Image 1 (cartoon, rainbow, N blue to C red):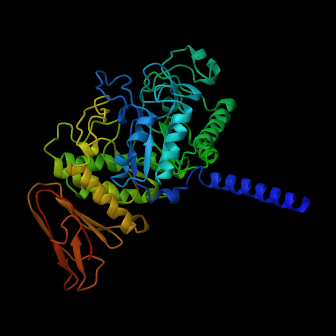
Image 2: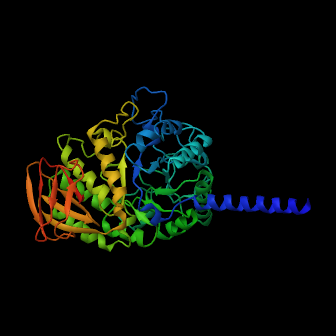
Image 3: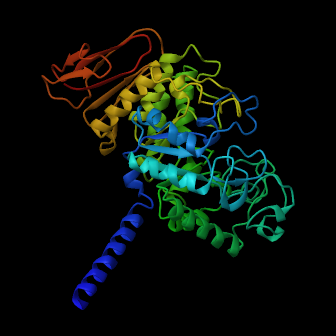
Length: 464
C-alpha cells in the first residue's frame, strides 16, 4: 500500500512536471519556428462584433471583441493562416480602441472582453494550430498630459522623460529616444525600476495568456539594449516596428529584436506595383537586404493599420495588388496580411484604413480565394526552407525562385513575354502555373523556358 502510494505520488509529480514542461514549450516559439507561419493581422476592435451593426465613428470604439474573433476563426483558417496578430490587449485610456494608449498594464481592456475571454481566444486558436502574436507598447502610455497618477504602474513623473516632442524621426537621436511621439508620455527606460517592471510584465503576459509571439510597437524610440533585455525576458520571437530607413532596421535586428517589419521593401513594393516604378527597384532592395542578419525573420507586408491601403485611390490596380500580395507571401520573410485585404478594402489614412469587417465575411471574393491558394501552396512547397534567388529583373518583369517554385510578376496591364535562361530545372521538366488547373504548363528545353504574363496577373510555376 505504501509502495503503491509512493509510485502514484511519483507518477503524479512526473505528470505535473511534464505538463509544466509542455506549457513552457508552448509559451512562445523561436524565431526559426516562426519562419513557416503566415500571419493575419487584425484589429481586435474592428474584426468582429458579435452584436453586429455599423460603426459611425472609426476614431473610437466600434465593438469588436475577443469572443468575436473566436466566432470567426473559420474565416481566417479558410485562407490557410496559421497565426494571428491581435491589438494590444491591456486597459487603455479613453478612446484607445487601437490598444496603443496604455493606462493599466496589469488589466485587460474591458471593451474587448475579460481576461478569461482572451485566454479562451488563445486556447481556441491553439486547438486549430493557429499561433497568437500579441501587440505590445513599451515606449509610451496614453495621452494623459502630466497626470501620471492615472497610469498603472508608472504613476510618477520620474518614470518618464521630461516633456519634449519628437521632431526627428531618425534612429539613435536623443530627440527620438527621449521625447514624446504624438504627445504621448515617454517612459524612461534608463530608470531601472521602469525597465525591470517592463521585463517582468512581458514575462508575465506571455506565460499568463500563452501567447506565441510578439509584435513590438515603436521600437526605434527606445535604445537597442532595452530591447535585447526585453527579448530575453519574453523568451519569444519579436517582430518590431522600425518605421525608418534600412540602416536603422538592420541595426535593430543586429542588436535589439529578432525581427523587424519589412518597411523598406514595403515602400519599394508600393513604388513598383502602385506607382508603376521600375521593377529593378526590387532587385536593388533585395541586394540592400543582404545587410540584414536574418531576412527570413522579417515581417513582410503590403498593407497595415498605419498606412493608407494599397487600393486607396487605386481601385483599378487589382492585378498589381495580387502581384504585390504574391511577392509578400512567396518572398523571404514571414508574411503578414492585413485584415480586409481579402475583401479589397480601400480605406485611406488612419482611421479610414481601420474599417469594420463584420459585415463582410465573404469567403467567395476573388482575393479571398487567391490568398487561400497562395498560402496553401506556400505551405505545401515549404518555401521558407529555400533561399530567394532572383531569376530575371527588368523594368516591367521580375522573377525569383524559392526551391522549385518559380514566381513571375509584372506591374503593367499589358502582356509581357520573357525567356528565362537562369533557372533551376533540368531539361524535360514540366512546370505548371498553380492558378491554371493544369492549363498553363511549360517544358524546359535547352536550359530555358518562356513565360508570358497577361492582364497584369502573377504566375507561380511548379514542377508537375
